[in-house]
Length: 142
Image (cartoon, one colour):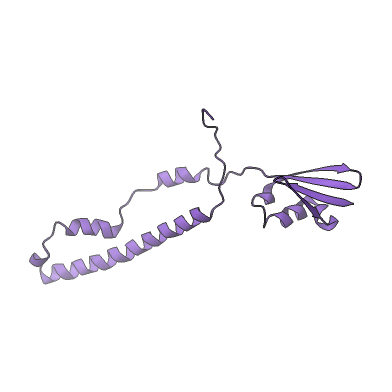
């Protein structure tokens, strides 16, 4: 029997050992067609040819993530917060003890600022590399 896989308007001929089972079709297509792993598969037979139609199903990726982001507490990067505090201080008027304490605050703020910066960069990287997803609601007027 001859097997033709139809996905996104493309017809791909596949061997029977791959195309005869839904799971092996999904596994074979997943690296090349994102979303194929969760797709709906239908089959139709015409003569000695079986056409396997792969219909990708919109997922729910990210639908609850926006609410999670909104629920996070707001905070200012510690470096910026410390900078705002330092703008009001005359460094010449500080005692030696105050200068040492300020140095410790600077080190802690710098380290926490680096951590936050890295977390933002990591999140940005994940967003840039994420597959686009359809929105779950119909926008009025479209």
